[in-house]
Length: 405
Ligand SMILES: [Zn+2]
Image (cartoon, rainbow, N blue to C red; front, top):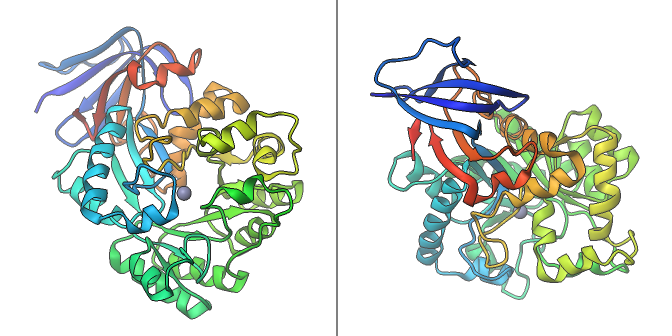
């Protein structure tokens, strides 16, 4: 099979270099070599891509998505949508994600996630490499339990397994392992409905006890799976940190003390800014600067992000997009744009490439380095100067596992 030769400026996942050459071995799907133009041995009969004004970067990673297959941001729609329709819509969205430069995404809970991942691996459908938690875990009556339904119906329809007490929690982990999960996702606070974020009187209460969360973490780690903890509110944040999850999702209501612990335990922090900023009701709320910072959503885009920066937390790109009309897959680069506002373009790019790969446990992805998986995109312009270079319209080529899409 032909090799690919990519020419241009390179952001390799850590640093930026001008006038480089990247050789892709299409046979094994890996990066065969990288170096300065003129100093690298060129393979014969290679297909040449790239050129002046283009930047070669690792394929983007969105570490927090869902495939709900529903047009609306609505828990009841997510649990009741016909599964065939959900699957068909998800297939179309996966293709959009790939064409938008996302070569890996991590599904934080959707009924069909593990099946979609399998279909992609088998080459039946086209999409980014998909890491799935199979079902998410929640407590009975918790965040993603549609409580207007009788419990047995909710159990039947939900994209989560509800579990209570350490042993049920351990069993739920064993069930997702059986379902083919690549990691474990647990809801430890409310947050799937919008109201709590904008209601100052509402105290966000934790879900699950530390004992339950420790059981989940222990059971997942025993089989080599990482745990992603959806955490909103100080109680929930303290609990996930104490239980030792691997990444904190949303992470709303940071304090200096919690940030210090996150740093000490080297937990990844995924603030999922874009799902908040693109939500019609929340977005306007965030932008009204006179609203007090005590409201969770305001606090998140001000104090939380300042603390994350101050304490040097390992911030990761994750949109929490579910494929709804307001948060469509394919526009996921918006999270990188949002992160760049706080961290600068380079750090936002790191969050969406090398650090996101590390957060997901993918040791041979997220960097353009010899021997790494050849997940690479070529973009028009330089995202270090203008982050809009990552917009879908500026994606020139997408290479996944060495194959030109
Ligand atoms: Zn989510």
